Image (cartoon, rainbow, N blue to C red; front, side, top):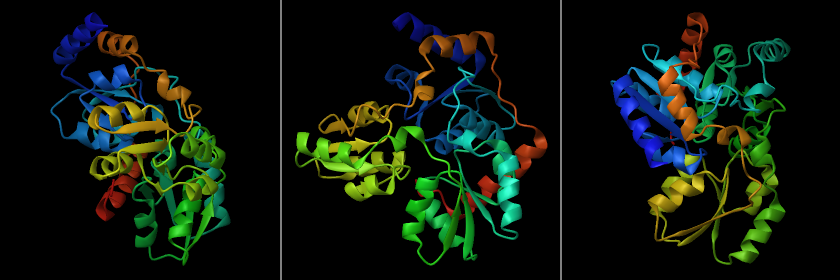
Length: 304
């Protein structure tokens, strides 16, 4: 593995590349990255570098976001088949139909969507700032896509507004059930339970708190608690343990694995740098519109 890593480091310098790894990536992929974090945070971090190439170890919509934010950089996805089932649950055509059914109602799209869907939306959001984005809109009715569970979470925090939800969801977070929380509590009494707001409402109700990935990382770092049960994709546990060696972290269930997030390997990162293929491009007209939805969100604040 050390030979692989040294080859990646060498090629990264030669290509003037920056390597991004999402919090859910394999541990060894996280360890060779220049930045590890959530999808939007990574794209913003890369845009502030002088790199000419972005190697995004994540899934397709994340690489699209990086291409939208850094149109002057070449964005490469090491594994082209790494998609997001939730993002695929809403198409631009479906969104157009939904807008036609609710004329004049603004659309808040989760960052976990394709560039084409973002381009059809009014404003973007992340799991960290979704509540604040919805609160900031003057409208009483809002279309929220594509994650119904995140939408239900936001609705519970903003009861004075009516969210029109699309029936999308994250298969990985939907697998995390209240009984998993109960079993994990029994195995680790006293440990604090943190889950992602993409989880089912009943799972969130069984936990001690719901946070985005970066929100969880920040919370555990600042908490006096020493043990945590984590209800999100298990890849995040590597970073948590690395950054908090004095604390203990347990997955709420070993079932919380996103197969798409595990498709990227060190070998594929090396191949991507060698061949400079798998470039992710977003048509300019779509990119300009999608960038507008992201910029509107950033004017409110990320809160990650």
